[in-house]
Length: 191
Length: 146
Image (cartoon, rainbow over all chains, first blue to last red):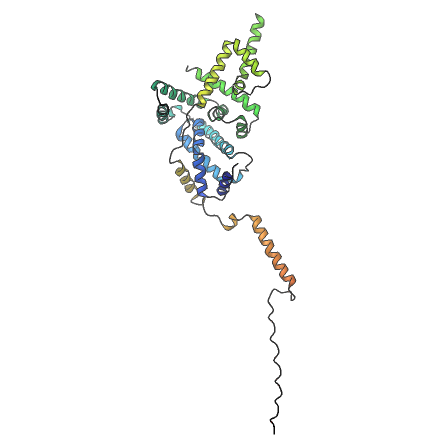
């Protein structure tokens, strides 16, 4: 942990509002991307990301600095996502048609603008593939979804995933393999 | 033929179970060579391997979704609303200064007071004012010369 992070933590523990703003600015995209990929819905992702930061701020005294702060933050975010997924499934509110069309348009636009010599067909293919991936990730079992998002989307190491999920190394690897095979099977239906 | 029918699925299952670790590069010993040799001969497992590799590539290439611009303001407002402004409230002196520091200061003060009492000759910390010297008796007045 860097000196700057330690100073920020100290200020957070003192309930410094400016420190909280700095924290949000630094990690909001990371947290939002994770919640969005886990939930597949922009409004839900935004709501859960907010709850993550509120929880972090409330419970900052319990962070013992034994792990990286970002790992702890991910753990809080994953737990919130799991709870929200359970809540939504209980309410039978996981309608995948609610996948944000706005984001899909933005994605297509970003795909086009990211390429200096865009080929519209390729850009659209990319956006469609991303939409398809997002939809199929959202259909995976919760445990599978978490691992695929953390490892293959967020590119976290197996060690970090073990810390975040509290699972042993072997379990993470075997479960991740099953999750990938399940996702591959689902995607194969579209190909 | 019978042996092939029995053994082949077992080998494929075993190899396919290793594919994730193979792609991650975490297989130990002769594992990578075994998988590689099998993939060179087995079209089915090679297809699974290629699909997994492409899928991982597509997943890692998913664009990062930035949080909305007003996100920070929304979180801060939510906190203020829920805590009625107490969440970021200025902490009291007792909250700001750790208990240990207060204890040490209290001990130092107590030791100081004890030392003062101990060194006092009267057993009191009251300052004893020096008593005013008794007035000297007036000098006898010499009788006036005759």
